[in-house]
Length: 166
Image 1: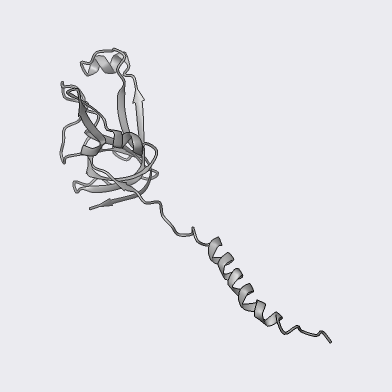
Image 2: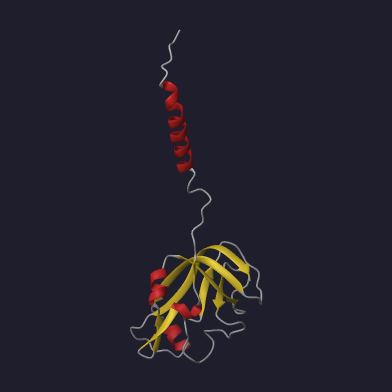
């Protein structure tokens, strides 16, 4: 017969506590969602030396989860996996006017699946991506722009985790 030591019973609560801590620590991160930074179109750009430029806040959010509200542009490609999110409802095509294109008045939203067009405001949550690209000669000619060393900045939302009508 095995003889039990009377101090052995004192270890049971300690062992139970340690096992509980281990189990809870294994599941501590489950079900947590990354918190998205709420931003507005106005926060994505600022005026410096009389010119509208990418804001420091937007630069700090590049690659981060953001949430922004806007409207789907009526000129967005139908049935595609992307659309233009615009700051005001019913805005004209940002590429069609003979004026200089303001690339801070819209975001390009990339989706995994199609979202139906709506005239209602929407909220989009996803990863903000800042893309800088030089316009081609055709694009510059088509939009009456100079083809100098300036880069166009495109703001994109990728890896959309939430998209809803608000």
